[in-house]
Image 1: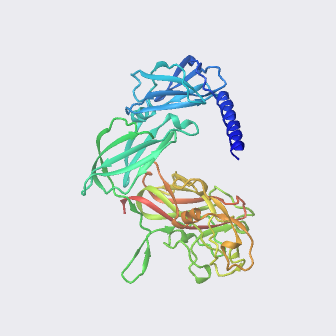
Image 2: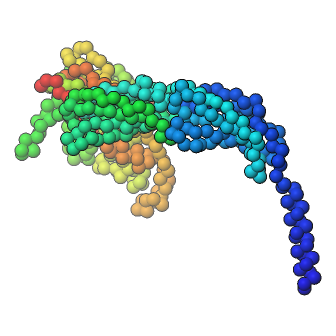
Image 3: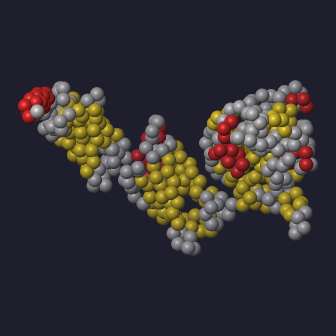
Length: 451
């Protein structure tokens, strides 16, 4: 047994020596050559020729960023350029060392270059960021040139303002090229603001100097009043000679301002507007003066935001219940379904003659929620109480929740003063010209000029 062990051990040692000879580190790794660089925003792109060596694994660039941190970037053998970032000062030269490294960790001689970045995108944003007061807050806008391409570099802005309880800070960020963000729910009154701008690795532009705004209160524009007995008196009313959307079935034009988002249709409290082609000349005339609901608000207002709700429930086949429903209370919520409203235009006027466009409200590109809806496949296993159903495609829970809360459009600036509004329906979800149903309610936010 001892002799066999010695033979096996000797064989194993011979194999190990042979393998080690094959993987012996290459000590002749040459330096990186033909080095050049091009400045980019907050950094540089370095190009080079890597040494010709079968064991080469990558090339590494080491430097110290604007935060004083030692950092590095690497590039595989298949690439011939490295981008370095995090350099804030375009007036400064930054040393960068380039080293080739092989598969065994052996390093080439080091080559050092000096690079000067072009103006950092953080500083560019600091140059052009703007603040302006809006109803109930401030509008923040900036241009970030890195956002012009996919994977733009994000900008983070911290905005601080005074409150009776002490300073309050709000944080916003975006990697888009042109940004406009409303900071809302700021108490009305006089406020002093300051801000800082940072990138994703902590580089910070100079703090914005203090500036002051008088913030106006934003209110929900009243549509009716309720007395102590619950009796409702409407402030808004239809302008019949200009309201051209022809009512059909359970649809009621006045339902868009009755304060009821949705109710069962056969209960006598119909709560959505719509029409069909049978009363509209054979097809729906999208985006024309034949699709209008015109309202006298009996007050002069400025509008800052718009919220609208689709019809929530319906008569007909229900995908979850797997049966026909006739009471208007479908189990499946009706948001985003084919005949439901998809878009409308809101116009304003002071005299019912001269009209101006306030906003084109398209639910599919809802400004506060992004593209809608996002769909998912609902399986029979998710609904064990169904009557022998099948898998079906429908809005995911987030899209349904946005439908329940109502779709919100933020105006970039206050609308001109108006007393009258015109709601012009422009499309349904399947874009057919046969039927539209489901503008259930509209809510306006802003301020009252006069009553």
